[in-house]
Image (tube, rainbow over all chains, first blue to last red; front, side, top):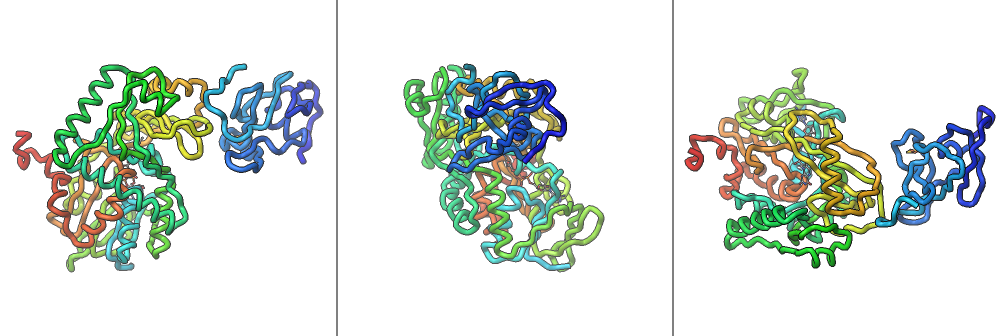
Length: 101
Length: 376
Ligand SMILES: Cc1cc2nc3c(=O)[nH]c(=O)nc-3n(C[C@H](O)[C@H](O)[C@H](O)COP(=O)(O)OP(=O)(O)OC[C@H]3O[C@@H](n4cnc5c(N)ncnc54)[C@H](O)[C@@H]3O)c2cc1C
Ligand code: FES
């Protein structure tokens, strides 16, 4: 669906739900996932409908993912880093579960 | 120019409740409101339907508040049935969490004083010590205790506003936003003429309700209504969503149906300033984290400031003009809590053209030094 307009000159490697993804340094996590064809970022709180980025500027909170165990992070507001593990945000965060790995 | 039974100035929480109630009584009314960039407290509040601690020094207000919280049950149900909008009202009671012993003592003292003032009317609350509190709210921090009042509850105030507007419009009500009213004039035949700020006449009506929040002071003075209100700023913090863990609203934090935690609100006199600043936000979050330590690693999603419609003693100001009978003004803090009474009961006063004797304590005459021997 999305096509990169520039080649990936400085590759960064991440994993989304077991799927290895090559992004470009400076990408937001949302841009990297979208460029790799991922459109479902999270599962809604009630039911199993899937959601993906809408605004890409930090306003809508539709793009939330889990990164290295940290829940509810806005993928459009996070830059890619080598080796991060990104997962779907499944429903609501369980409070009390610690943020830091 | 159309002729209405009642013209309502202000489409916030008060004006919308009156509009809904008057339409329900079959009256033809119109609501004038400003636009999206106005000062609109209805859009920035905390959503509590709260009884606990209110009315010290004015038992009529304590009773009025309790009555509204009782009415809220059927009111929320009616709004849902008639408009399809669920206000997400819950009435499981609420806790005032006390962070230290002094805080605990003074809060209990306040509620005991309210109980004495209530006399036969009674005043229900419960002192909940730490161990029991932990049992009821497992996520509470290391605090000495709390007080609990079974009448407290909370709702989604934006949905409340929407439900009121929807119900009003469904009954043929007319809502005119982006129409800032500048002039209110008595007509020779007893009614009123309403004009916009540009001088254009926009309506004629037999009766008038001034419910313009912070705009009421100026508008009211044109028809003999003294509305002594001032802005008191409150800042609110909203966190990311989480699965439900807090089943009761509290004085510091409530969890919404969507899962977000609302923290705050602060209070300070800052004129008409609606900016937030870090120092206040830090105070809010620090206290809330003391009350509920698990919030420590929650991310903040939004913050805002809104302006309470505050009166000198914090109690409502309700009146009909002496010089211009038929012109009413209503202003109060706690427009969410009192929404049920405003919609169901106050509208009857307007129709009848008389505020019942037992609500006279809400008249601003009480601030008049000459008329009030107690303050001499
Ligand atoms: C931070 C905060 C937290 C709060 N929390 C709670 C709570 O938990 N529970 C509770 O019960 N209450 C709460 N409140 C109070 C509650 O929000 C107010 O009591 C209520 O909104 C007041 O309603 P109002 O209609 O008088 O004013 P508003 O809601 O401000 O509405 C007034 C309307 O009149 C319009 N207007 C003004 N001038 C004119 C004009 N000249 N012409 C046309 N239109 C005009 C304005 O645009 C506005 O839409 C809170 C308030 C704040 C600030
Ligand atoms: S896409 Fe809207 S907040 Fe990220």
